[in-house]
Length: 181
Image (cartoon, rainbow, N blue to C red; front, side, top):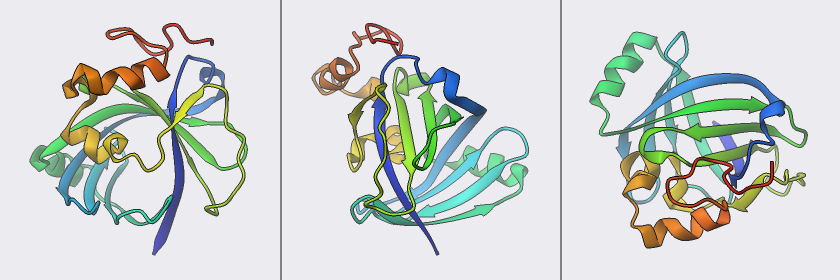
């Protein structure tokens, strides 16, 4: 059993770009999900990597996660059968205090940019970069499963506005507009 312990943040600006170690274009499809937070996800990087993941509901910032490599052709078939999907560019970052990745969402989830840090312990101290504008750990509407089912573009303007303000963005502006880089 794997335990995923992570914190998540909305990202403002482009100051993270010099920290990128690697980049992958990801497609994710959700095959099953429940109101209590159980999800079954398929993920493909469009090349050699494909995974099937079962995630259980979070208890605080930790949750059980089971992930298995699958053949890319199987992932493509499962993606075609998934009820909801999303696309994003995932960047691995060279930062201390945990395993940091940053997701730049495309399509109906743009202009969202979300950083995640996987931790060894729930109470682990971390240095939060200045470009992390708002912590969203535990906010269900920002989970990848929720964004696949109900993309940011479909949120009512009154729902979007506080988050766009937190990012110092105006509707329709790209990431980093008005942010200090």
